Length: 104
Image (tube, rainbow, N blue to C red):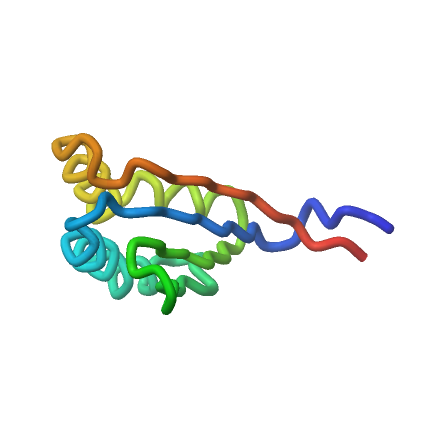
């Protein structure tokens, strides 16, 4: 098996909202969808919500390469989200990011 270092970058980002703030988080995360999907190099950007626990969210993200991911992280809409999150301590107390590369 070989790790495909030139394959698209895949991220799964698990977040859990603070109780009572889940709709605020849903709105803030949802606002990232349209502008991110228009970014060059964004191959897939999906937001999911746990049907059994409405506090839990998952982003499934695929970017063509590291440059595309870096551009996403620097994009004004993503920076605005980070500013909103940081201005509201405890809003999203749990965030776990896993980065994946395809294996062949």
